[in-house]
Image 1: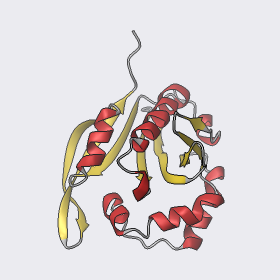
Image 2: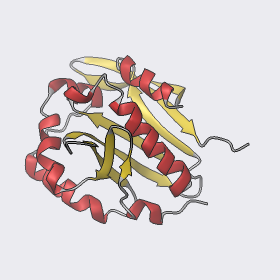
Image 3: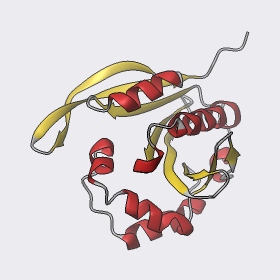
Image 4: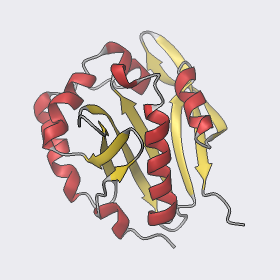
Length: 183
């Protein structure tokens, strides 16, 4: 049985180097700047050209969404925006949900993503009560796939040619992490 109220709580989760904080209007400009980067767009498969106004509206409304959890990844000491992540598409009957993450270019390759993922999975499994968290990652994003595997995700399948990017079709891997079994 999951506790859906945990999605509306909008917690602050603190790790060794980062803090996951509720996504808010104060993150909108940095969020927008991240999605102006062509490599970020490719790694996330973002075709839509988000305007600053659209992201301001999205960020401002995230506190009121009771069916998902959107959190900014911040540097614990400086408070700088490092990215964002989301836990969404919650299926209460089957205790599973979907996950996504996006980092700024400066935050990649330093273990920030892995720390953020572990914090969110802990909350998803221990507080929300999910049994399974799944994600999709593009076959060309080996770095992300390795990071997900380090955090307990396993490849469960492949969606062939599910992403059309830059004139080519690319496969998408479906990965999932299960709640750790208690001894």
